[in-house]
Length: 564
Image 1 (cartoon, rainbow, N blue to C red):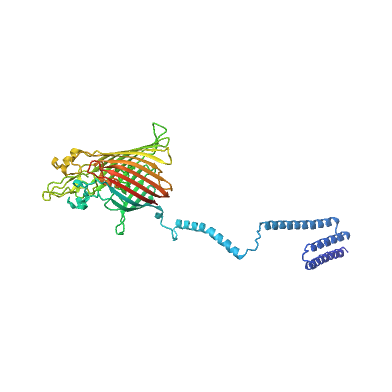
Image 2 (cartoon, rainbow, N blue to C red):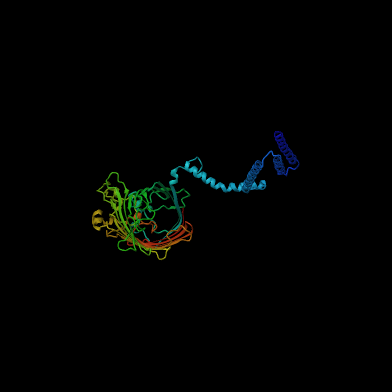
């Protein structure tokens, strides 16, 4: 009987389950939006069956309670899983950005803006990687190209030379010695004389372009080309108005510079910029030197006499060949040694003291033996205006033969003192004094070299042989330290006095009465930068002879300069 009852109950339970499933399926088809209803029906039907089994004593109350608890636990777990799933779905929905419909033209505009914004960055990254990896991309050069730096300047000049009314070619004292020596004659040829009477106006230009190659740390090779002439060491000007012929370019500089790690040892070799600290009393600003130079500069140190001062010292040595004499051991040289000291005071004032000794070797003339020309090499390759000369030709056949050479030796002692005032900073106020004396000029040696007292008249420009061997310059500079910024300016005023044999005339300032010695006068110079690295300059020069025949000249120079 129990078996029949159990079977009946199981059948009822199965029927209830099937019925609930069928009812749920029908309601799901009829009402798809109410998916929770079939589950509720299934749950109530099951509970009714359990109650019926308990009433029929088929299930005990304990077993029925366990079944109910099991059903409740299962439903609770399912509900918890559904809640967790809903919560995860809600979190996912919160992270999702709902993008509304974007028209095609807006998409194109956004795409273009992003492309333009990223292009520069992308191109920069690609080019940088290309340079690093040496790709075949335009603009990528070998590594040595990155070690080159370039600079230069251009100057356009209008110049007027105005000669004094009392200038005169008396006694042939203003001969062009280079022309005379070339022809070995002193005939009255107009080409043999400098123009000191007819005023002259010229338009001139100068271009200089420099390259610096950094070979390695502390080693540089420097080169500069410039307009100019192979026969003029003190000027790179080119005079315009030559039937529109192209101008010449010359190798103005080519040298190597080697510096120590602390930059206190520096070596120069080749055709180099002027290694000497000085003014244009002795050297023209355009002059470059062929040879070797070494500069030693110890580190700046505190002055042992005062804590308020800092001093810096340097020593420069130089050896420069002037001319090689192939068939003789008497090559012409310039040797020099320079020592400098500067103090920087507590108030930023600065005092510089520089002492230099220049020793020219084998440059003085030697008179030929009778009817010989073996000593012709002692005549200078180039000569300027002012130094005492004499005729070294000694020919009884051609008695009018002339070959001029220097009558004196040249051993120069130069003292430069410069004081810079800092009270007007950033405006510089600098007062300088430069004094030079040729201690190599000795009257007895000159007369002995000429030959005899009867040959004194063969001395060109100094018939008595007396010493005129001193020179000096006093100068005041006021203005900005450079003209690279718009509105900067500089002015200077100088008085210069240079006796006949104080220095070698071929290397002096070519603007000061055309260069040379036996000259004194004033120089006023003003510059104004009307734009960055571009400035105008006006220079006024008034110079006269010291003890020679009348030779006065005023020079006006108007310059337009650009530096790059």
